Amino acid sequence: MLETRPAGWLVSRLADATAHVQQLHGFSVLPDHRGRGIGRMMLGAVRAEALWRGATRITLRVLGTNERAMRLYRAAGYEIEGRLRNEFRIGDRFVDDVLMALELPA
Image (cartoon, rainbow, N blue to C red; front, side, top):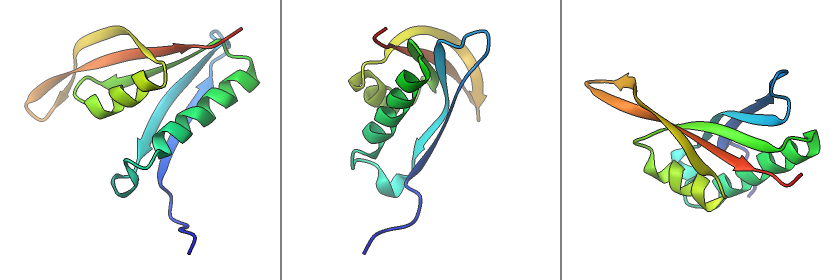
């Protein structure tokens, strides 16, 4: 039977001043669906949409403690461009905000 529950979500947009940059603002695969290639498919959809819109790059931010997500992004070609050290306080820990980007063909 075809499953009809959502497997994940994402939010992306182009900003006016940086219309050549697709910004990925939210991305998650629900825990029960992880490890099935859904994240790769979602990133592929973001890339296709960005190319369709004429973007030359995609940017995102990820928590420095989220190694699984960073592995997924690196496997999709994203590179770390910067790190805001201790940007977030989660519980009693400080966590880095990692900036990543994917350059797209012109």
